[in-house]
Image (cartoon, rainbow, N blue to C red; front, side, top):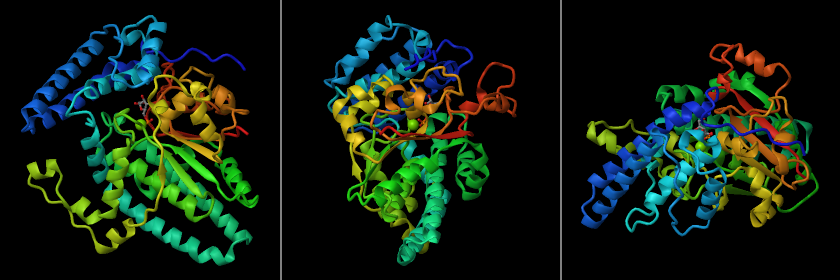
Length: 463
Ligand code: F6P
Ligand code: MG
């Protein structure tokens, strides 16, 4: 296997790492402090109040250490097995300061460190500093949610009706087109993660989500291997395999999770899979990532959509605002979701890349039984490619190292680009896009890859 190039570092002025560590993380920590403070100030129980205040003080210290580029300290042992791994890695790196660290590790460390302020407490163990923000953003994507619900219901209805025509070329063609459409919806659902919200308005988000926008965005998918992924699923079905799993390594909650469930629902109703296994994170992660609680929150919102959309949020109450009522048809369209398996694993919140996945015997054995493992989003892509400075024309199968051919895992990455690393491009493509507006030009910065405007859909057959 060719050697992996160096990883992106926070002190690389040309990388998004630089901007992230200096500008974005302090904003994210400030948001976490504000959110916790808000909850603390609503506390009646003095014990809980005191614990909450101590946590706020700890988060403020973390922000100070980051902004003053102090050494990253070993994580407090909160009883979870991954702490040792984090601390060993930190030591191996020579206990660097924040800005002298690899981007991937330090960003994971940031969220793991925040979690260690809450996990040893009595009253705040399960507290999610990002929950308010995740729910608020989901509510604000209501137009796209309703549009998709209606479209989905319609499509599923057609699939049911078409069942009689199964086996005809028309049916096969329609199914293939739908597979592409569903995956693309699912792909662009990732354009809206909250950690980028420091620069996007809600209006921008809504624009990204409508179906017109989806069509216009197809030209922005730089690599599209959906054909290969579809072939793997139809082959397994044609071979008459009774149990066929698709796994989704989830990324963000709210709208993105909603579209993931739409894709999952489609895979089940079309018979392209018999089971869908969803993999969430175990701690609040990269602001918007799915934790198990988000999953149940979303399901209950969809099960009682009127209650969800018509009850004023905390902020709306403060501003004396009443949300628009939901039409009966809109509420009906939303009630479609079935049953899925959700399977948390601490590996997903480790600080290392997925080049270490083969060492996680139990997890990798589980993924090998899957027909297709879909990795959602930017961070998962960074982890697959070790967040390393690959030449952009490197084949995806090479850049994912031990997760590539021979790994036994069929990998599909659905990723909108929000970081520097990108592979699998045609020669000259990177240069061409650098030349487009906002692409970075001659600055030496791959700016086009930071905004979520461009995407890659990359497949690697591992079996
Ligand atoms: O690029 C900003 C960023 O926070 C990256 O650090 C991270 O990889 C990504 O966004 C998170 O995006 P996603 O939710 O798509 O993984
Ligand atoms: Mg995310």
